[in-house]
Length: 155
Image (tube, rainbow, N blue to C red; front, top):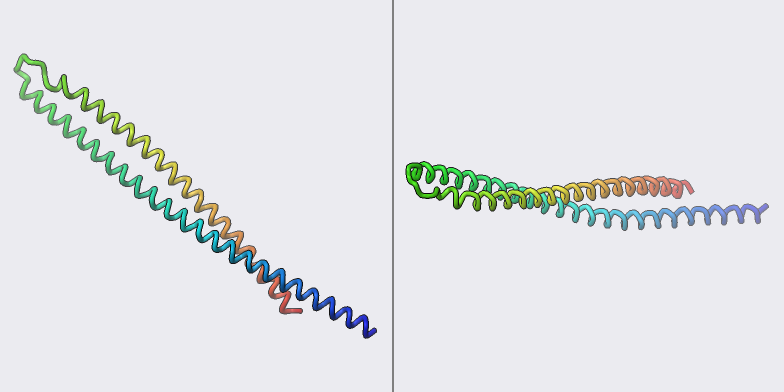
């Protein structure tokens, strides 16, 4: 009978030790995952902020290009009005196609760049969502760890 109680006590002690060790390992895993998630989240936030700034800059450049295009068109209209009665070829006929084509090329390049930056922003947002999902997983692990700690305290 005494031997059985002794063995039962040893098994109970061993069980408590196993629970404690499992809890310790879960805590270590939790800390590691939280650190990695924090690093990933910070990196994703930096990328997202960078992409937002680049997109804003591109939109400003696009606006400036459109303003320049409108100014060039207005200038050409004034030159055309001034040369209306002349028999010489209009300066508009020479310069306008070149300027318009260049401005259109610039606009197309800005549109492509804007789309590229928007795709990068979407990718960064997806990365942030993944980081948040992983953080939720870490919270679940932390809750499980707390349950194990409560079981250890009962021992």
